[in-house]
Length: 371
Image 1 (cartoon, rainbow, N blue to C red):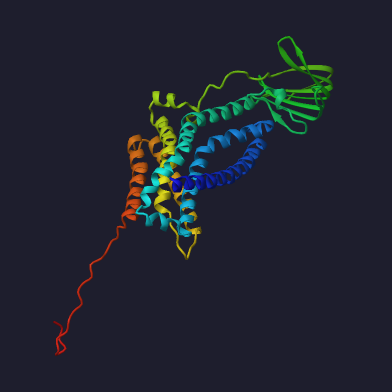
Image 2 (image 1 turned 90 degrees about the horizontal axis):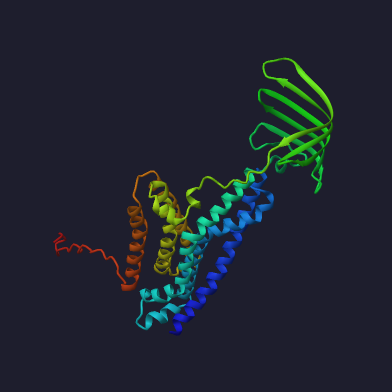
């Protein structure tokens, strides 16, 4: 029908515009947060854009759900405001007859949310964990930053270089403090160079001195050297030996149905079920209030979205702690939300109304007494 195709075209325009705005906002917030984590040493500063991309990708199911909800609610509210729905209702159709064109528009988006939630989301979280693990296990040389004190991977050595020559693996005014095998040593040198001797890497220092003190003794040994080599730790190339539930594949979660894994399954399933319910809720809630305009509906959309997704997070913690089962939570939250939305839609479609019976008024006799 022409009316259905026009609705889908307007939904597509509204959905695209909303999606662009939300993605821009999320990317900006993610960039700020990722830069803060990189400054604290959680990520490699050179991987900020990659981390941001993976993070935005993991947030796409939520962004798509909200974009779909706002598009449905805003388009239908605009049609009510411009009296286009009056023409539709005048032809003998009700609000429930708009469900087929809405789901005909929404089904590709729902399929994308399904794929993102069950397949792409754990992959993106896995890549983020890999980058975090690789940066945390980097070698001592990679940890050295000019003008900053840096700790080695095992925590027994502290490095400081005043400045270095990029690309030459050399530095000036080198300082190394070591605490191992019951000894504390402080080594300083005018220059230092990284050299590969056999299978190991050495930091070769020139023109410096070394102070050594044994724990429990007062004696300090001072030695001056022209050339001194200190072996430094290499990069840890081992694979990540842990997998958080957010980075586990859906199949692995199903194979080991412990409460922690069931909670993650509930979250992923909830993303697609919430998106489906938002289509029905948007249709049931669409309307116009001349006093509030369209702002009221957008405020309702934001409030309903926040409450729904907070319930998803709360239900995830309930399942994880064993307070509620997976099936009970999915049926209670998503089934209950769908049932209330359908009842709301049926009320508007069939013009149901609650009428209170009025008590008959008391009559008075000609003498003035109540009958």
